[in-house]
Amino acid sequence: MDEFTQAVFDAAYGSRPQRNLRLLYGALLILKHTLRGFAFSWPLYLLSAAGLVLPGQFAWVFLLLLIPAVVLSGYILAKGLREDYRAVVRGRLLKPGDVRRALFGEGR
Image (cartoon, rainbow, N blue to C red; front, side):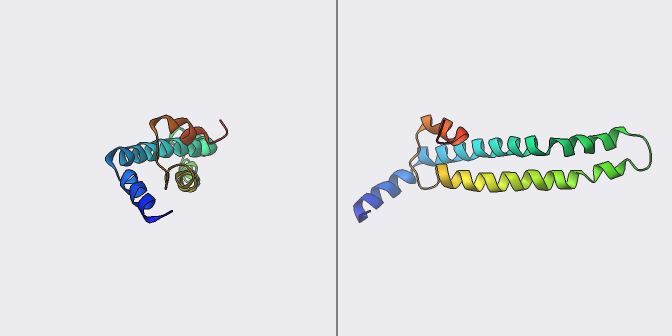
């Protein structure tokens, strides 16, 4: 890109509407990957909840399953968010109609 084109792009990229769209898309991607992480680790959350319901002195063992559940959900959130933000949002001029592409990818 020549200097003029880069300056016009930087001005448009830094504008308030573009910052607001990046914030909106970031929030949508966080929601998408939080739900995805929960969908993959829901059995661990369910077993952890069983520790609260079961009587006995060893019910706390089930609560230890919260550790891998939170770690797995956090890993899925961080990795997916980083990849999707880089592919969909960073370095692009966004349009309000591009929400479908941000949530479902290019192919849909």
